[in-house]
Amino acid sequence: MNTELQKYIESTSSYFEEKYSSTPTLVAYAPGRINIIGEHTDYNLGLSMPAAINRWVIVCLRLRSDQRISVISQNYHNKLEYELGQPFEPAASWEKYTYGSITIFGNQYPINQGFDAVIWGNVPIGSGVSSSAAMEVALMNALRAAFAPDLDDLALVKLCQRVEHEYLKVNSGLLDQYASQFSRVGKLMILDFNQLSSEYVDADMKDWTWILADSKVKRELAGSKYSERVRETAAALEEIKNKESGVQGFRDITEEHLALISDPIQQKRIRHLVLENQRVLAAAEALSQKNFEELGKLITASHFSLRDDYEVSCPELDFLVDSATQLPYCAGSRMMGGGFGGCTISLVRKDSVLKFGNFLTDEYAREYDIVTEINNYQLVDGAGSYQS
Ligand code: GLA
Image (cartoon, rainbow, N blue to C red; front, side):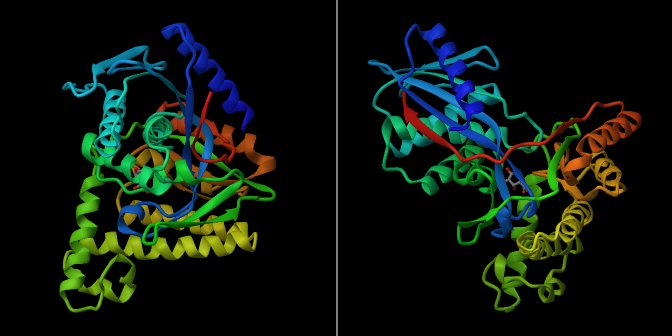
């Protein structure tokens, strides 16, 4: 196991002992993720290229002999408690994720015993690296280990997605949860949301590395235009289908079909989707040939498409991308994740990482008076659990 993760598990475990005066009997963990390319493609059954990072949510749990559920958030120093089967109204968002995960799991696989649990995490919140998915996936892995060992990984991530849909009211796709569960150390995944399958590719970038820059603009997916985008592309697909185009699903759509979409906005959304899927395939090819200049160009093209056609960027993200792409040692840069804030991801020469970080930090502070945070994550294995 990753030694950094092990250290965090030990400290979460000690916190559990301190709070509940007993040791946890099982531990589950799930990482956050980055996404190289393929954004806003998941709920449109397209392609993406994510990987899990060395930031985690950890759950330590011990079954009780009664029906009481007690969960402490170590980060928020807060406790959620209720009796199984009794009504409970989650208020804070960590409570929605927690209660939502327990309830959705419990509706499918009976939870016949209460438990004590501690949740801790260091996945940055609101930065576009999927802290919420890490939380759902860690909790579901803990619940599976306790109550339903036969539940398979794919069914597990779909339960997590339902938490987003039903408790957070965000119609998100499966990118975050899938990456958090299925990633492998040192690999990127080429993920096909139509097949719900993935292929692992070598993430060795030779002289290059991935650098994240946090705009510190917090995005609230629920309050954002996310659901509007989900509706727009679904409506466009319906229109194309109804025009006897032979198209049956998103993946049948090609550039020739764009003219069938009467709403120019929807046309732009679908153009992003079609071209972004092509870019993921081209990026996989560039990666396999270690052609990092080409890969960088595809990354930046993805940003322009997200900015102009999908309209999910914001001035701060555009500024970070424009600043990064001026630099000779940056091959490409783009916004990452849902957008409207969060991080950019850039492909930077390893020998210039420090220079890159300093440049971006200075430029961003000058323009927005905000201190960005620069991160260079390791790619780690997906979620897991064990009896302790
Ligand atoms: C958020 C959502 C994902 C995905 C990305 C955009 O992270 O949770 O499902 O749609 O945005 O690619």
